[in-house]
Image (cartoon, rainbow, N blue to C red; front, side, top):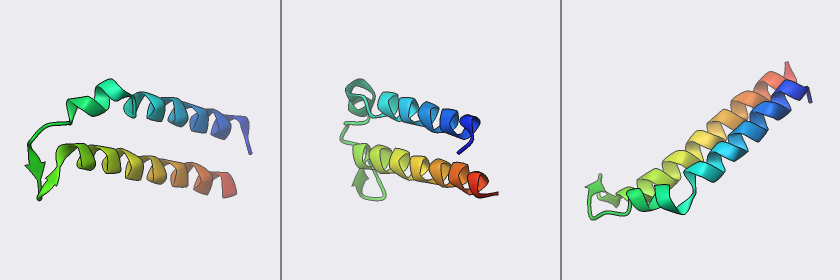
Length: 64
C-alpha cells in the first residue's frame, strides 16, 4: 500500500474518532425524528456508511 493511501486511512480514522466522540453524538440526541427514526440513529449510521464508502474508494484506488 502506498504511503499516501495509508495517510488517508489514518486521517479517516482520526476523523471518525472525532465524529464518534460523546459531545458530537449527544448533539443529535433529541426527540426529533427523521422518517420515524431518532436523529441519533440517523447520525451514527450516516457517519458509519460514509466511512465505509470513503474506505472503499481509498482501497479501490489502491488496486489500480
